[in-house]
Length: 106
Image (cartoon, rainbow, N blue to C red):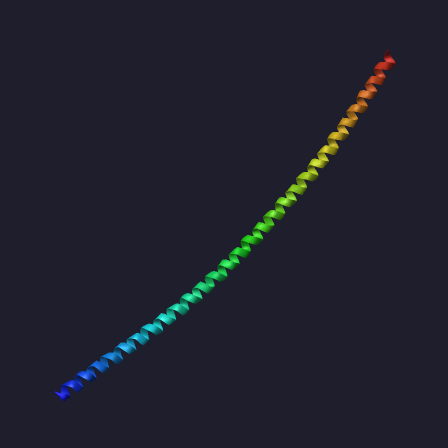
Protein backbone atom coordinates (compact mmCIF):
# COMPACT_ATOMS: atom_id res chain seq x y z
CA UNK A 1 0.00 0.00 0.00
CA UNK A 2 2.93 2.32 0.57
CA UNK A 3 3.95 1.78 -3.02
CA UNK A 4 0.42 2.46 -4.22
CA UNK A 5 0.24 5.62 -2.13
CA UNK A 6 3.63 6.75 -3.46
CA UNK A 7 2.46 6.05 -7.00
CA UNK A 8 -0.75 8.02 -6.38
CA UNK A 9 1.24 10.95 -4.95
CA UNK A 10 3.61 10.84 -7.92
CA UNK A 11 0.68 10.71 -10.32
CA UNK A 12 -1.03 13.62 -8.55
CA UNK A 13 2.24 15.56 -8.60
CA UNK A 14 2.64 14.92 -12.32
CA UNK A 15 -0.94 16.03 -12.93
CA UNK A 16 -0.33 19.16 -10.85
CA UNK A 17 2.83 19.92 -12.83
CA UNK A 18 0.92 19.46 -16.08
CA UNK A 19 -1.81 21.81 -14.83
CA UNK A 20 0.78 24.42 -13.82
CA UNK A 21 2.46 24.13 -17.22
CA UNK A 22 -0.91 24.46 -18.98
CA UNK A 23 -1.76 27.48 -16.84
CA UNK A 24 1.62 29.04 -17.63
CA UNK A 25 1.08 28.48 -21.37
CA UNK A 26 -2.43 29.96 -21.13
CA UNK A 27 -1.10 32.94 -19.18
CA UNK A 28 1.64 33.49 -21.75
CA UNK A 29 -0.91 33.33 -24.55
CA UNK A 30 -3.18 35.73 -22.69
CA UNK A 31 -0.32 38.17 -22.07
CA UNK A 32 0.62 37.95 -25.74
CA UNK A 33 -3.00 38.57 -26.79
CA UNK A 34 -3.23 41.55 -24.46
CA UNK A 35 0.02 42.94 -25.90
CA UNK A 36 -1.28 42.51 -29.45
CA UNK A 37 -4.62 44.01 -28.45
CA UNK A 38 -2.83 46.91 -26.79
CA UNK A 39 -0.75 47.54 -29.90
CA UNK A 40 -3.89 47.40 -32.05
CA UNK A 41 -5.65 49.79 -29.70
CA UNK A 42 -2.65 52.14 -29.77
CA UNK A 43 -2.68 52.09 -33.60
CA UNK A 44 -6.42 52.77 -33.55
CA UNK A 45 -5.91 55.75 -31.24
CA UNK A 46 -3.11 57.06 -33.47
CA UNK A 47 -5.27 56.74 -36.58
CA UNK A 48 -8.20 58.33 -34.76
CA UNK A 49 -5.98 61.27 -33.76
CA UNK A 50 -4.83 61.62 -37.38
CA UNK A 51 -8.42 61.56 -38.57
CA UNK A 52 -9.38 64.21 -36.02
CA UNK A 53 -6.51 66.40 -37.23
CA UNK A 54 -7.54 65.97 -40.88
CA UNK A 55 -11.14 66.86 -39.99
CA UNK A 56 -9.97 69.90 -38.05
CA UNK A 57 -7.83 71.07 -40.96
CA UNK A 58 -10.73 70.54 -43.38
CA UNK A 59 -13.02 72.57 -41.11
CA UNK A 60 -10.44 75.37 -40.95
CA UNK A 61 -10.13 75.37 -44.74
CA UNK A 62 -13.91 75.41 -45.11
CA UNK A 63 -14.18 78.35 -42.70
CA UNK A 64 -11.45 80.18 -44.62
CA UNK A 65 -13.26 79.50 -47.91
CA UNK A 66 -16.52 80.80 -46.44
CA UNK A 67 -14.67 83.88 -45.20
CA UNK A 68 -13.18 84.49 -48.63
CA UNK A 69 -16.54 83.97 -50.30
CA UNK A 70 -18.10 86.40 -47.86
CA UNK A 71 -15.39 88.98 -48.48
CA UNK A 72 -15.72 88.46 -52.22
CA UNK A 73 -19.49 88.81 -51.97
CA UNK A 74 -19.15 92.01 -49.94
CA UNK A 75 -16.68 93.42 -52.47
CA UNK A 76 -19.07 92.58 -55.32
CA UNK A 77 -21.92 94.19 -53.40
CA UNK A 78 -19.87 97.34 -52.87
CA UNK A 79 -18.94 97.45 -56.55
CA UNK A 80 -22.59 97.07 -57.48
CA UNK A 81 -23.57 99.88 -55.08
CA UNK A 82 -20.95 102.15 -56.64
CA UNK A 83 -22.32 101.32 -60.08
CA UNK A 84 -25.92 101.95 -58.96
CA UNK A 85 -24.93 105.28 -57.43
CA UNK A 86 -23.13 106.24 -60.63
CA UNK A 87 -26.29 105.38 -62.60
CA UNK A 88 -28.40 107.42 -60.18
CA UNK A 89 -26.03 110.38 -60.56
CA UNK A 90 -26.20 110.06 -64.35
CA UNK A 91 -29.98 109.91 -64.14
CA UNK A 92 -30.13 113.02 -61.96
CA UNK A 93 -27.77 114.78 -64.38
CA UNK A 94 -29.94 113.73 -67.33
CA UNK A 95 -33.07 114.98 -65.53
CA UNK A 96 -31.30 118.29 -64.91
CA UNK A 97 -30.38 118.64 -68.58
CA UNK A 98 -33.90 117.72 -69.59
CA UNK A 99 -35.29 120.36 -67.21
CA UNK A 100 -32.85 122.95 -68.64
CA UNK A 101 -33.81 122.06 -72.19
CA UNK A 102 -37.49 122.24 -71.33
CA UNK A 103 -36.98 125.64 -69.67
CA UNK A 104 -35.11 126.96 -72.71
CA UNK A 105 -37.94 125.92 -75.02
CA UNK A 106 -40.51 127.68 -72.97
